[in-house]
Image (cartoon, rainbow, N blue to C red; front, side, top):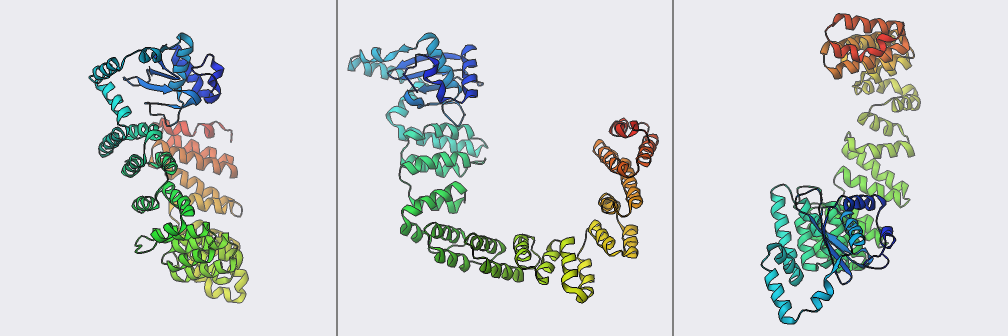
Length: 472
């Protein structure tokens, strides 16, 4: 910021986002700035926002200041409005007036001002900032218990610059009780905590209580500065496994690769542990080792859907029949079915029936029968398929059996219309639109038949409007 207090808009405009500056100017022109005072190199004032009580704003050289509004960033539009108001009417400079007071007069003035509750609290913040901050933390906690507290928390974030270690730690602990996602506020508070010299033990305690990413990252950053102290904290009982994960991550950041991997391997218990280890091994370029642990996880956990990334890895790098079979068991798909058919050769018929039994998706079964031209199996499938499967079955049959696909689309559209309701009518229209790509005349006629069958359903006619207008 240029000269301060500013003499022209160019002195402060570059430090505001354009939208914030524009809205601040609008606030000033609307007469929302109630009062403006100058105290030395600081401007103080009140700006009427969207709430009954005006916001208190202070701004000084360098754009440093604060506002009681809930906006998380400063300078805000209220600060911009205050600066425009100063340019418009030049704030009364209280500095010379205060300096002219004798000590007895100054003391008397403060004592009289202390009788005004709002001013008394401001004086408390100035004379005992730590105690005032902790009192606000207590009030924030009470608001959390009532399901609110966001505004109180945002207000405390604005005061973090004057808070000490004890106050910031109290604020961080309280934030973990928030009934909303506290992560953005945690980041701001941890930024101040890092300036004060963070204590790894305190950060670890908070992380074990609530494993938020900002807490983890701050602990790891401090762990790089105090590695032995941080690693010592990560020893001992670890029922949640969080310490082990932190230890491995810290060791990796310290360049102690083998120790980090050993820590990860010690705690291999569930699918997530294997996923994390394999990801680390791949990041380090140790593909062969990653494949061995992926295979171990496959053997341990079988059909667990969380295994899919590891099964994809095995298929991509090895592609053995057992890899395809394992992935097919978790997620039946045409790619693995055809791969097994090609790789097993004469041995494929022995596993084919078992593979087909695993397929619950009628559309996938239809695609398989079409590829193998197993018309009897396809006919049995279509005769026994539930109505809700008709749309996906029709999509699978469009290229090879367009007439059968058309029949399924029309049947499904009729079913949706019979069910009633705007959403179902819209689905019916979408199905008929797909049928129109196969046979426009049949789709048009089906739409006509539906509105004739239900002449009083205006919503149905509206959803089918475009199909009714199209010439067959």
